[in-house]
Length: 96
Image: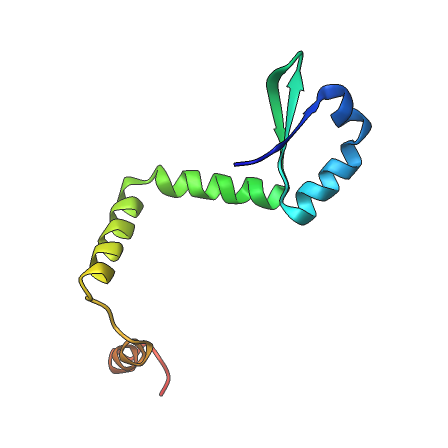
């Protein structure tokens, strides 16, 4: 993934603009100290999405359920929206 790389001095001088860009365009910025990676600036929504993805991938039960769903799609074991609505109505879980 491409990220703009900036020194700490450059990031400090442009911090407000970097935060605005990260939050509105989802651009990510890599900040270096003495030429080595030190930090990353990313928008709050992107950070939240990253944490949510890590939580999902860290839950073996959820990963297994996703894999099972992908397998069902691959073998054609799917239902239409109309089929799902009909099943919910039959089960009394959806208004007619």
